Image (tube, rainbow, N blue to C red; front, side):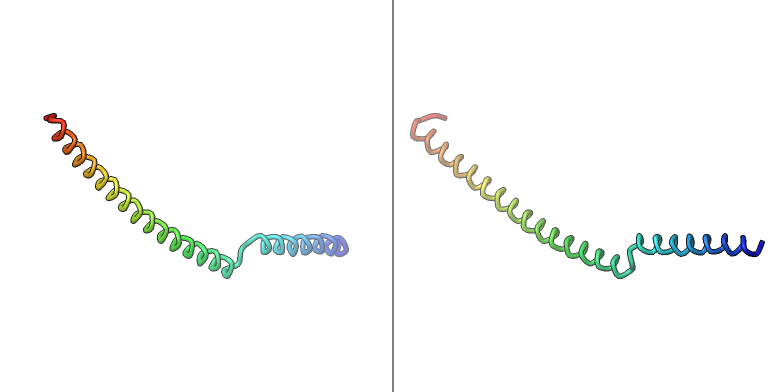
Length: 86
């Protein structure tokens, strides 16, 4: 009986050690998580900066479009005036 207990306990201990090793190797350490969080923060900052540039560009495009539209209105008014169209 004692011999059978030793055989079973050796198998259980080996299985437990293997299980703990597999569990430990599949989990990220706290340092790994911190590195990923820092990378994500840097990407978010870069993205926010890019979004600010895009917003400024959109406003510039809107202003240019408005100016072009106003120039077109002035030109059309001049043409109507020269042609005598009301």
